[in-house]
Length: 423
Image (cartoon, rainbow, N blue to C red; front, top):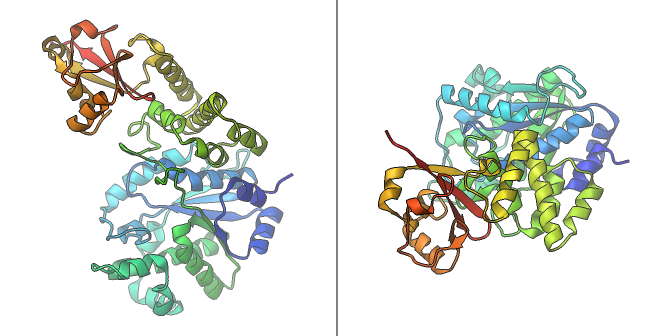
């Protein structure tokens, strides 16, 4: 039977770690407390954040205690890692509101109520609670003296910024010290011995491990996750329309489901390993399929990820809507298809006739009228499951089916247009 370290390794979560043998023993022999930080720069995480979240969930299921840190303090400084310019600074009130939204999303995957309910109860903390109280002179004397500038600038995050004309601001240069202080503080107050994060955080994590050892004479560990890109070379969780959010108001459960359905065939196996709790034997079987059978594997992936993020009911509705849409000729007002992305337009506009190119742009199926025309010219635009061949074609009242039109771009992207009565 796999131990939790081997589970993380087998599923692909481990990119780098400090002293692998020691970390394996720490995780496999005793209950450990670990933490991951999330910058509340928005009121929602996106699906790229599911890598650390799912790793945390595996560890909690194995008996370890998670701490999710919202960087209320560090976000006011801004992490330069992976950034080509200084991040926009947010007001503290906005940071707090964003943190509340993120907590609601984390709670779908983790128990963060501090009490055991089948798994060690985790904690949700805001580093502003201790960082904003720091005395600057004392911080420099007690913490800053452990850092060497010549070592810090070797880190990729700093080096890349220093090579650019705009350089690195002094406030950003302090970020590594603050993140290291977080780890030391959590080690002291919560006996936290492991920090995890994306591989771009490796330098910051090592700084925290070292600071904890120097100041507390305590062994600490670090682990990073790979920075995922898809088989197409795209950043994980990005589409032509933007990020795939965990917030249903930003990305609907149907659109979330479709993101996974539309993933590259080459990503199915790894996505099943990362983003579901299916046994690896099942993952390998589903990922090895081909053709129509692989489409069924994508449906499993989409359903499992949507159920975890939005609940089983939303996953059922998204799956039913997808089957209705892709079955062809489904009536636009059918209950099964109600989860398909929908736009309302005034009935009076349809009475006059609307250019289909205009509708394609309004519904987000193409970014511009030029792109909409090219879509039609290439035979990729459909109205009510019929190919649109004329770039000047109009949609009108006569095309309504149960009060709506069904637009489609290619084989996979659907959008309903519902006629809204005025008065």
